[in-house]
Length: 229
Ligand SMILES: [Zn+2]
Image 1 (cartoon, rainbow, N blue to C red):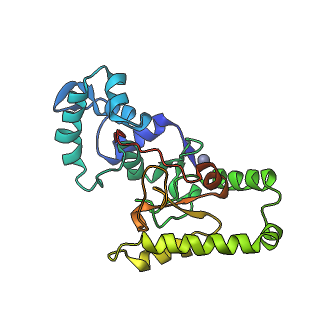
Image 2: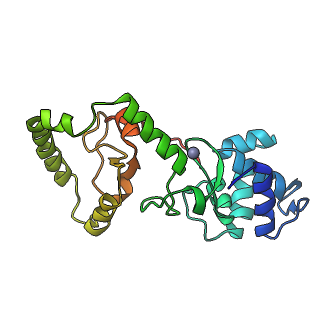
């Protein structure tokens, strides 16, 4: 089921035992309704501050003094929008941006924090269909024609991968990620042989990508050091 942002806020307020008009103890002009609404709508706390006409410092105080104590179980690094929606078992699809029920619309994932895929099943299926239409030669015939090239590339890749695997890597978890990939590619978020940085072969550096996304990404990595959550 898909829900509107208004319904999502109502459900979050209900789930957290707040009323529509209840005000934040730290900022009496601001209601829980407005802060939840902005947090779910926006991807960064900077946008939340600007939409509410508040300074970054005030938003920082609101999250650290009011919201974090309310949700001590929220994993660090998880966006507030994702966390609030998870409380009502919903998730925003990273591709189509719809707010969809996690159980109905998302496949499972062993590498996301909530164990649900980052995009909905419909978007995943559409991406796969578009890939097949745009890449009609991407099949076993292509492999047969270029077998020696593929084998040489695989040997080179395996060597790079073993060099990038630290002694403390959890090989069981790494194997499970590859076993659960189905038709997706297992991608190194920071490539093992990137242009500017080289990543490690560890589970925190892995993500699933569809064949189309994998081709789009290639070996590029754009560091997002300033990303705010
Ligand atoms: Zn979607």
